[in-house]
Image: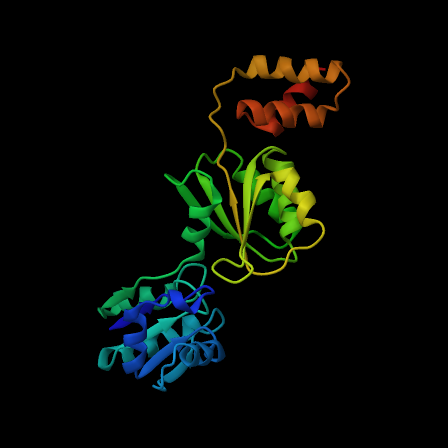
Length: 271
């Protein structure tokens, strides 16, 4: 069978007894990075030296059929660098191929950066959506966030330390300066940190540089209970008082849950 094995996302003490037991007897391991797997085996004190087969984004489709056939005769352990395979990591196409071929797939549950960050974020956990990595290019990233502007569930993203400041600035721009967010870095590690606050506030904080592995958690959109006409009147009143239209639309959108872009356009159309 194929065994999807969750590995620690930082602290080796989070490795389950079942994971250790499985690796001590495994003969074949498909690993996202074989060097990381060797370090993990050493760190866990495992003397066993299974055959390691690279399985990553660039070769998974072509290797899946071969690995499925190997799994007919011996258990194949599948591991990513950290966390659960298939969750923004290799393994999905392999699982698809195994199911189609009638090969059993099981899992060794364990650490996941997604649910770990969600749990400590302080944001609603009853309903959430995992959105993977935001697009690298600024224009595509803003478009992706624009499409999520009305999402009511808490949103979880992976992000790189090099892009977290610009990503937070785009969250503030597209979802509102006051949208609640949590930046979770180095989870389970020595320098673990969870920074919580408004999107604009954390964008300013991140401008000085943020290091480490990062998970970004963003609150869902508030319920749109306000009347659009009343909200437009609030925007117009703020503009009359001297506030910029963009800022007025953003503030009223944050308060009412209505779309900032639609409020902005409505105010322009009403001129």
